[in-house]
Image (cartoon, rainbow, N blue to C red):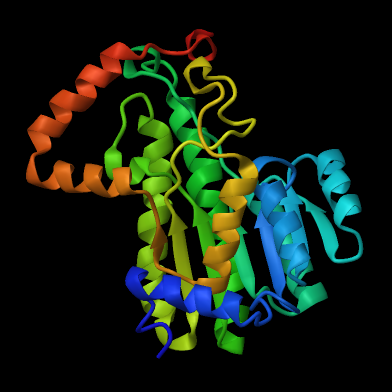
Length: 285
């Protein structure tokens, strides 16, 4: 029943009621796996869920940075260094995690790669598409598929995907990045319909700009956007309240305009595309 009434209009009063009554977080005593946990949104999310009493499983490529985060959290965290673009490594991670924890209750697919590069600079860079799909879509889907059977068996699980408002707006210079995130957004929406009656749900976090090491190479983003901690607070709320999507007003407006006035939307975004050049990082060969 809670899932059926979990609309955006009702999620807020439900969350406020829990906080006013000071009820324990639903994350307390649960196992939460966070990818990309060595920096940015993933690191901040790991700290936040640990504060709410969860057992945190930290996943990222950089073992030293992951150990730094684990040490800061303490006994409530376990580090699992893993390259999510390596299929065999992901399968081994799933096997180890399930052997040690039986099941993961919450999964945060946060690890990702953003590439802002115009088509004019991409004709000989098909590998940008391949590596975007590898980390933003294929990796999280493989990990999710590995963990889903245990979630379905215990009849509880929630997956939060950190995607982008670009899936609604379709911003120029982000073709590889937005395409890969849109694939994850759509895949999860369909997966949630197949697991609905087993109480396994999905949330797509359609974030706008967040200040992380991933966005730092783009000069135009300097000093702009939410902090990692602000983004993590939204991720934690999504874990607790399990909404279908979390987005922005601007993203919703952009999505509507793309439907009702698609050519006008094309003209507007093409104009913005010309106004904001490729970054120095994008121009490097």
